[in-house]
Amino acid sequence: MEVTLTVNGTEHTVDIEPRELLVHVIREDLRLTGTHIGCDTTSCGACTVIYDGMPVKSCTLFGVQAEGVEITTVEGLLTAAGLDPMQAAFKEHHGLQCGFCTPGMMLVGKSLLERNPAPSDDDVRDAIGGNICRCTGYMNIVKAIQAAAAANQQAASADASAPEPANA
Amino acid sequence: MLPSSFEYHRPTTIDEALDLLASLGDDAKVLAGGQSLIPLMKLRFAAPEHLVDINRIEGLDAIEEVGDELHIGALVRHNQLVDSDLINSKYPMIAAAAPQIADPLVRNLGTIGGSLAHCDPSGDLGAVMLAANARVTLKSSDGERDMAIGDFLADTFQSAIEPNELLTKVKATSPTGSYGGAYLKLERKIGDYATVAVATRLSMSNGTISAAGIGLTSVGLTNIKATDAEAALSGQAPSPELFAEAGRLAAAASSPVSDVRGSDAYKRHMVEVYVRRGLARAAEMAGAA
Image 1 (tube, rainbow over the protein chains, first blue to last red):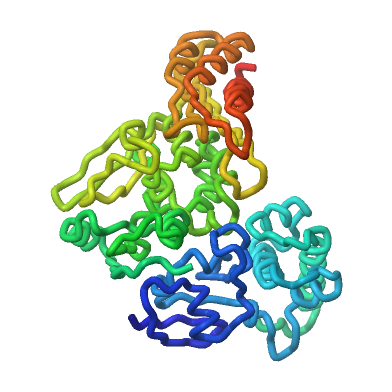
Image 2 (tube, rainbow over the protein chains, first blue to last red):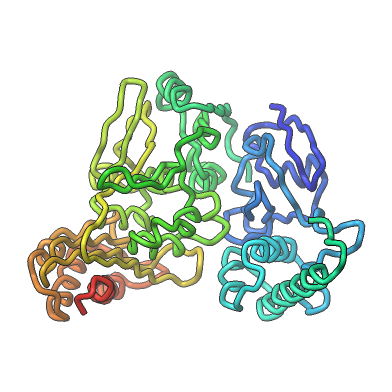
């Protein structure tokens, strides 16, 4: 079955079986292997992607459901200007040990800050409730997401004081 | 893990979906949020030959008051309930339960209709809707019927829906006057099934309880409506003794089994504790404490 979906701003048309999960399409058809398969049972969040604006577990959606949908994977965080503030914060604050959960954690963090630019630690812990870090590095993950929030706030106030507003 | 092969259908109107269900019969399953169905298919506990994906049907995702009732469309995602001003301002029991369902990522996709139709005795919304005396609307190409939620949640993973029917809406009478509600959930971690959870609501009138609802999660073969406890509350003035008695009656109505989450005796005891606490919280909200 032919499906057209947009991943990280690029439109792709793939020919897939209906039973292929979205994570298979992303990893095997599009070769974007930053999206991980952890538990494969909707528990761990290693396969998290932003789907139609919301973080979801891509092992629990069929690829065919994504017809016309915009998806962001961890590869989509990187811009021409370099690392996304979330990526930079994870690097700076040692928000990862083995790195397996990291793509999911960063995407959930990114999505949280879009809804809530200045979250409390409890808000952050709540938001990553569907993502498991088996290195148990949660303290630094929370710190990293908070650092990204602070960096975003700083950038926003710098933009506000600049004579020309940055692109929206 | 790959599920068995199936044919995929993506209707864009209710009529189109109902025609598909009518012609495919027992070989088809409805795909809503998929957060329970897809895991079951991956484990091959379910292997439908056809999937009817209703996610592109418009008009099934409204949360609204119609007359003296609350109507929740079958495709309303759990996080829509979490974010709903109407739910947060007027429906404290649902508002308390919604953020405790599964985990934040699952809540972005999981739907109220799918959750109820799945009939998992560990489902949170089943207990809530039993306590709310809710009804579900079932549509088919032959017409439409409403069914009490208690009849709908027929058995473990077994609803009373016919293969040609689609659950389109959940309805509950809007509370008036002084009322309160709570959902208390004991879970080992976010995303785990409840060890025990209890939905409670109370409406007060002239210092006595005019209506009470109690639903139980994870302590039987289905979600359980604690009818004896509800009856004991009705018409009485709220007191710690009364709520303790309701707790004992609700615990007696439960039939938990021992598992990795706790012994049957522990779970039964926690039903008692949570009914007591949940009623106290509801009474406090209703201004009776």
